[in-house]
Length: 326
Length: 294
Image (cartoon, rainbow over the protein chains, first blue to last red):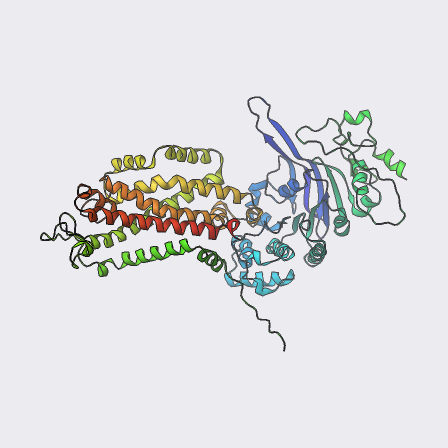
């Protein structure tokens, strides 16, 4: 199976202009991200707030230029916003946003919102666009007569369905979902997740699922990439990562999940401290100040991702931790 | 008995705005006055008893009908015997035209400039907004006088001058609301749909910035009438014998002691029109701004 999306060392840095009394700074919001995503599968990107997962989503959706690295979509190299003008690439990648209250234009009817991608990217006649929009409404579980209504007449879950419908109008191969359920009620979250999974089976979509909710990720993802301060620390099949996390940060993240298990009192290596500022990242391994296994060496040399038990892990002592676990 | 559930179409956004607009009595009064003035302006040729520029040499400075005048000139005549009522009626037409043209010009130009500043940022933004700041730093009437002095006096040039003077308000407003809309996710999703800059500016963002612009346009209408009247008063706007309210005021200043009606009626007409537009503008602002809704 060929990858529909492949990232090689993708980075997104922001320059902060210096004033008179301070130097200009570079924020490395995303750095050194590599992965490949196959058709019909889901890659989840997890991490705590501010780890760069949303920025990565915007770069992958061609909304922002990558500072360095390569992004291949369907095997074609892309150049950020410039490529976004290329209709073929634009049609391949679409995005569902986190907040369904902000992502739908309040002055446009649902019909116009759904037809906009078609009107811009295809030469379909108006009647064909209307038919396509109504068919898509039915596909995402709304009624075709919702076509002429405005977004404010819908509930949060229905709005997210509209947002998903819009993302699918161009028959994309990849959908980037930036926390698509975190703004919804728990009861609605399940419906939307099931809808996403049904659509994936039907349309062979590849999802890039950005989330901080590990329960949701466990449910939907085939592969997980854990990010810390803009860098991936571990990537692997969901089952493997959840069963046997190798990076200390992944372990801490998984341990922080709320669990309902009667009588189980497994020790939780809970994290102390806060996510360091990306303005002033710690030297060496970005995680060493919070890591229970940290050694002096960690503060000096930044670990690059290397294969441990068949998956890339960015930790100097991953083997020892794995051996300790077993 | 089974309850019948019918599919009632939800109220459209316009009906919603109308409902909150009618709650404001002053705004409705303003709207009524404006509609009345507009009708008078449209039907001026039918309604006016005399020609606005015909001089009745046998009836100079005739007082209004309740102050000893006759019904042939209900509001009296001016110093060269022109019927004041007819002149006011034709002046309404002129004021409405002035207001519409000035507001249209500055609204369109200001919106385009403001959107461009918000969209292209950087040098474009700085160039446009500093120019607007300079224009705002000069007293508006003085700036208008300078522009008329360059273009030459006359009603059309006065309208251009007033449009330029009111431009910065529209530009700033358009830029401010466009900038806050640009950060919203629906703009990003429109971009994801492949929308280009022009489409984003005018189809995606502009409809969401319209509310404050509409309010400013109504308030700007009264400003335009006032400024044009001021230019006319100074002799730089409409030239005699055009029946423009400001020009009428200017021409009759010397009679303020002897014949009060010559000065009072044009001034009163300006006052009522401006007040009506301000009342309606305030009502519209409340109706269009969801934050002010109860």
